[in-house]
Length: 355
Image 1 (cartoon, rainbow, N blue to C red):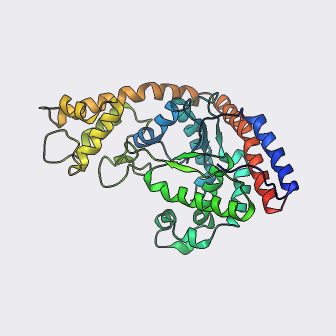
Image 2: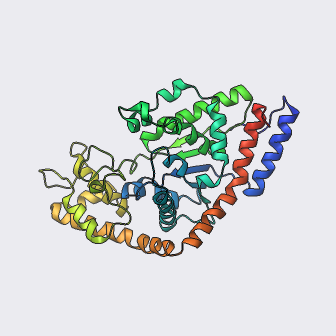
Image 3: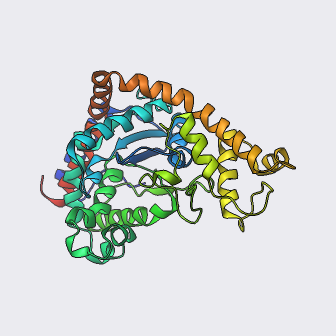
């Protein structure tokens, strides 16, 4: 982990000391690894988001020094209706709290409420090469064939993501395997900045979980479950009747056994969802459904989904019924992390000679 001082320049050392003091006022010193997690407020979270990320975030709040951010600046790299974006931001915050994020243990805030995110992204732009950005898969996917019409923000999205991570001296960043490239870019930026300006930033690592990281679409097990494709996803706000219908229509195959066979991707996906929700290993799930067919399996999976989501939905509805309280929690979270973010920004500004 890099140090936060530069012994070659007393002015830089002084600036960094002041910045560190500001950060200490915000958060007590901790020996726990610091984890930064960001999620976009676009559409409803689905069961894949819950199993791959959100439930882990809630469970690991005491294991890590966690920071949770709703990254609405990333959302506007694609066209958004302003009123819908505001509503989706509050809705996502309520859902994160409903699944168990405790703002007393781990701050939860909105990205745009802390201006250091955008400010540091500009500084990082000035050390990031076009060659790095040209290799990023996400821009190619989202821009499609008409790249000339894509926004500069969409192209520069990975640098803003790097700023999100770097601002809080994150040691680990929970991501799916498809996001590994973004963490590699962040590491490239940190290494170049530290080499050019002295040890300033912490070098983060990805936190990738082998199981539950890629829940596939119910209607096409070759594609990852997506917020933008409702027929293939179980959303965390879906009522029992909708869940039952979606599971009943979920793709299976011509065989009847329930097993974790990579050559049977449809049933592997559904069985993985069951295994993760029931917290049972593969052998136990296969044993439980031995001699049973898809009808029994889908009925039990439906019941398990409904039972898992029922208390989450109740808490979510309660939070959404008090918008003022929800907004207050988010602004308190921003106030809590802002000194840390501003301290990191000040280190970067001092190192680059603009402070």
